[in-house]
Image 1 (tube, rainbow, N blue to C red):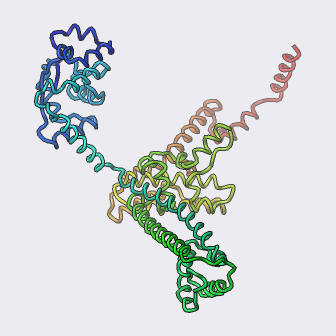
Image 2: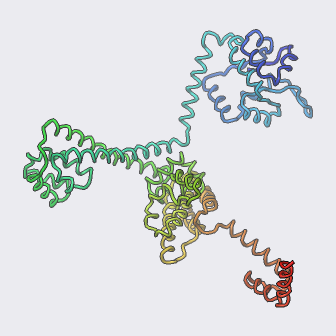
Length: 510
């Protein structure tokens, strides 16, 4: 639909830039009808056509329908001449796209926004077919279709499943720990010796549920108890402790409540195991290299903290290193103290195996590799774990380097080996090689020097050599910076040094 000004154009032109007056005229149907009149209207052919155009508008694209509508209702402009009209557009992105493709001038200032608001308010008066609530029904149906399409084509929906799973897993760990301590404390009033004999919380709940009242626990149940504990000696000690326990007697009602709570705890523990398997399967599909490098749980927590795998891939290695330690970072910046060395990656086994002096270095190196793995997983066209395995081997080599001094392999060589293996398997690795190269160049937290840095160093060294050659005229004398310094010292004579010292003393005395 297009609207054009009425003959009272001078009045509208006088109001351009005076937004309060335009706002007052928009609400009045009589005044607004004098300002604008209907020029053209093209309804959508179907709901699918309306949804397609709505998607194009949201993405800043121009469809064929919009082009045809503009060509039909706007005056033609001769080549080489400027148009004498301007199209008012609500979204600046659509205005820029129209201006680039059709060379039609567009404007999206506050006055245009107020006029469009008036058009939406009085649209049923311009188009009589939209009366009796048809417009509201059409808007509601299109909004539902548009929302469903956005949710359906969300590229991060697999990441969302991982985020929900890891959040629930962490919450279950806290709840299971709290519930287990409650079962121990509750049942220990009746059988206190069992808490020292059975250390595992999950096994303790099952044993407490199995024993029930210790006064009725007989020798015939010793075999089943040994199966639960997976140890006959511990089962015999539990049987002996039940006969000589110092605990208080318990009523059937209290025992029933303890049994019910222990059953719920056992079921939650089993669900936690199933949820962990589900998380492993999801990580193997969404981020196989990252999970292979640092583990499923830590990788899922990194994705959760970043918001998605794509956001994590966009983070540099320095940001990945301190993800989860934002409070400590800002506190250190505020107090001018030492900044944190690691965040969520502290839970990785690599940092625990490193020495106290090397924890910061290995965390920086590990963050570099995590950034590379996340970029490969996010931008690769296929799933593989070979990059993650080689990156993990590189971290192992770096740990050995800190201990024994054995030089690790360079990242470029390792990535080239993996690419050759994938090519041998018949996989196209062009996109993955680019992602790996980008990760190697952008991560650079604790790894080897990148080719770009080496080139810069070489250029600087060449410039220094050329300058020394111009001064001395002999390339052999300026082979290294150290030799150049020695040559310069040799050129200085003792006389010149003494003269300089005397001059300095005279200036001080003066």
